[in-house]
Length: 199
Ligand SMILES: Cc1cc2nc3c(=O)[nH]c(=O)nc-3n(C[C@H](O)[C@H](O)[C@H](O)COP(=O)(O)O)c2cc1C
Image (cartoon, rainbow, N blue to C red; front, side, top):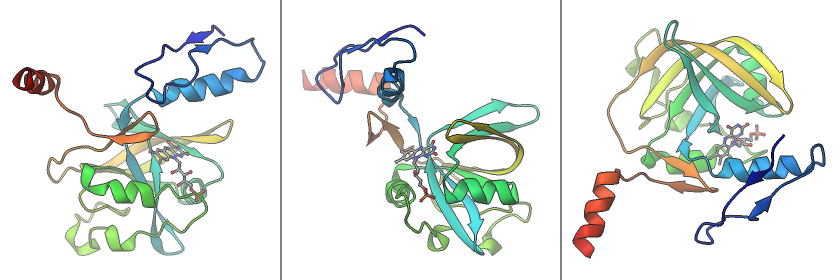
């Protein structure tokens, strides 16, 4: 494994500047953690059924796999309630969060606490019949999923899933996460013209 050099950036949570390590020294785990903090992306809440109620877990490890057939994957810690729900039922939904759902991301990431979210889901009667799993209000998109393969990799389950239904009610500003904090995006052209206006 090659050493990663992470340059200092304006002193914002940038961590150590020299992340070189000896192979198998254990330092690569920390370097990987620090490096992955640099990744900025969308945030999802994975919804499952737990004890007959809706349950949510905040997950950023979500990626499309292929278009035909429509397939995605998520990575969830195997110690979580969500991992046990998915292993048992093989069903879940991926709710891509909008900025209006920041509080849900915070609620659904509290380790060891109840994450029942029935009060935040769209009533069953308002959903198309083919949608099976809980859909969170104000989501950008919800993917109703059926697991096809579950791989165990270290501490996590990699859940590869067929997309059974997609709901994309309306466009809302997406919630982003990176450098250990919540962010919102600004289009590059927009940021430039703001700078020019204030110059
Ligand atoms: C922004 C954000 C993204 C997260 N992404 C993941 C992830 O991709 N996979 C994961 O296993 N945990 C992720 N977590 C942590 C889980 O949400 C948290 O450990 C989980 O809700 C604990 O569930 P439990 O109470 O069932 O143990 C993330 C947390 C936050 C705040």
